[in-house]
Image (cartoon, rainbow, N blue to C red; front, side, top):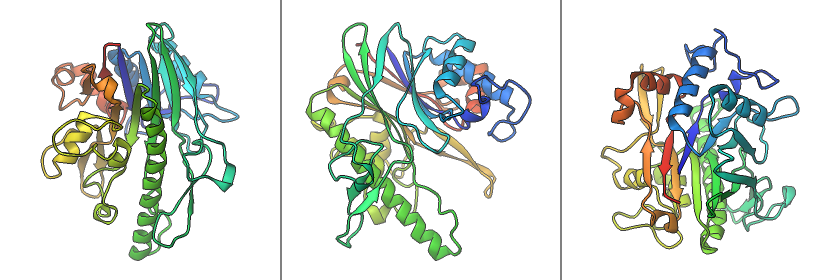
Length: 349
């Protein structure tokens, strides 16, 4: 079977409040790309993936006026996708939901959040992801209260062939220092935001360890928006979110992941080769420099039992993947559809 993760930039802008596709020449959220162009490109990419399950990062908004399920299920019907069912977890206020699209003929899926609901008082023991996490982020011996702006999606997927998978969709991102009035203030805000992101990674890691210790088949999918070399505060904090989430042995050179560690070959390579060439999953235009920046942000991390099944990872990068490059229509669609590229995992279950 094939499992994918895909961060779709400005997906929400392609639907009206009733969840219908806006296939017109109005501008999408992407620079110099119309809504019709982005929709057609996404349809081609999703069809080419032909995945049994796709963790959609930055899925369309869900609120009192809009429905993520209505939008994505209508999108799947329009393009005849097998992954025509949609699962949503906790809503968020960012207009960028985390949702699972899946083939109901292959699996059933339900939102299966763990942890206690603590409200604002919080807990230091991996509370439910829509609650509050208590942790001392610095050295002032005072606990900080941390919340997720995008609570991870916890899925129990039961395959029609029998196995049960735990899928966790995550989008960890350190906010830019908006509102800073000086360079010193921008630095202080950046450090504070990065510290909160690492706290979220620790919270997520606690939950992942619960699954791993229970010897459940576990897959973490999504966008962990940091990593070695991605900002000037790396030396200050020592570890990235990627390293925290993978586990203590996740970034060690050589060897396999430890007993309670997750594995992703692209993350492992990126952590080992800080000055060498690494895989990339996203491509951003940096206006002030007039050029593109590429980064490794999107991952599919698996538990040791799934790694033993010899899965195959693939980044659908139009310039790095030979099949994507040779297929001109797919190459162009990948560039139009999003600033991220899909990542897939093929595994025999």
